[in-house]
Length: 160
Image 1 (cartoon, rainbow, N blue to C red):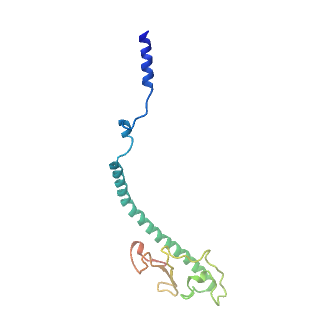
Image 2 (cartoon, rainbow, N blue to C red):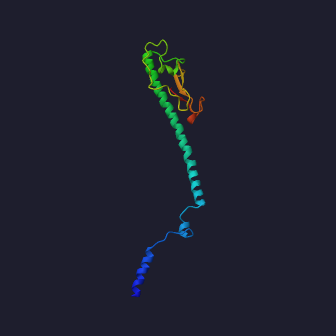
């Protein structure tokens, strides 16, 4: 009889698991060491150093594309103004003539834009000159640096 009760007791003991204690090896292997965390942070820093310049380069390209789209939209509004008035707005009237009726404008059918004339993507007003050096009018943005010429994001965006 004694032999029969022994296997039952050993089966009961093996099925019970106790939680690990603080000094136990299973407890110590559950977290990360400071060195492991530093290695992960260095890897993340290296990845950010490689990806961030490419990301910001794309942002600059998108600002240039936005400027091109806005100049195209303003050019279409200027063409509509010319169809109604017979001439483009003068340099003094500027792009505001697309939104508000100039004095002595009898055939003005505006506003020719749904919203006010936007600034360029870098927060500066577009440059408008009529008559222009490159056609009936010149409409342009000087890019991020606000200076004539440049490359990349600093390049001028023009209507001609």
